[in-house]
Image 1: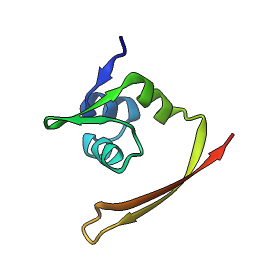
Image 2: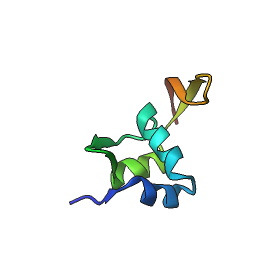
Image 3: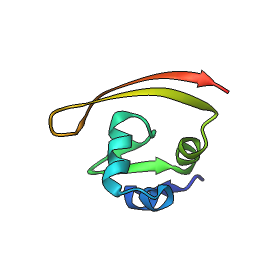
Image 4: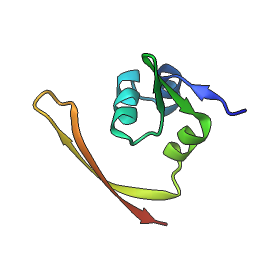
Length: 78
């Protein structure tokens, strides 16, 4: 069985804030499931995020408040 991480645990591993992890999850940059009121991140997905097989060309558009409005990704194979 794979280990599940909460946003706080993933934030410690990634050395970012829990809010940043939630933004990654909401935008689809970090694959996760939102159940109830929490994000659950599989260990496998966290590992892929840390060391991806592909490097995405990411374009992030923010709204007036700095929240992520839209994310466009194109994958570049290594």
